[in-house]
Length: 108
Length: 121
Figure 1: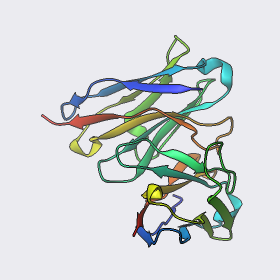
Figure 2: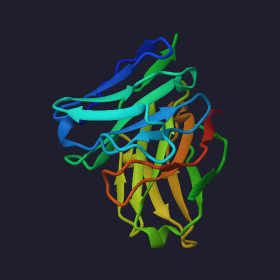
Figure 3: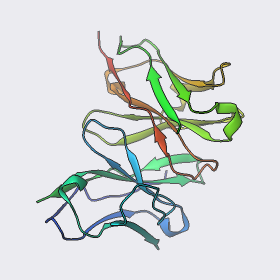
């Protein structure tokens, strides 16, 4: 089955950029979605289809996808960005949804 | 704006079955052409996709759960359901219903608030 690999944690100082990676075989050929989940809340999509930002999501959030790695970038991290982030794809070979293991973003 | 709300038992005994219903407001399931999902999250762990159902009734399941899971559309056209059999403590989780897009590979835009189901005697 298809596996998405994320770093368990990323720490960054306020105002600095944060980059969260999502690795998978030829992930660049798939549409990658990113979700933010704050404690006790349901996930919220922050980037869809590699780089699209839903309405209401700050421009600080952006995505890229190429080769075997997709990346979520938060350009200037704020305290409110502290959350768990998950990448997600649809695996066409097995017809199912796959989530990465999640990355906990800590704002120092 | 689509809203989803899960309902069902909060406590289930081991070996028993779980039935959850997702009520959809802001539109009917049959009219939109969207994929409707169940996703769970074991406390302190990541998200796990359980399965999806298209408005036509076509279903897709996580291979690791497929033998114990069934997702169905309700006749009301504003609800869909999850049934999971042979529960164990490992199935204790927050269960979310959610609406995907018009393609299988679309993101999950709308989520219910989630319901914690505990499997315990």
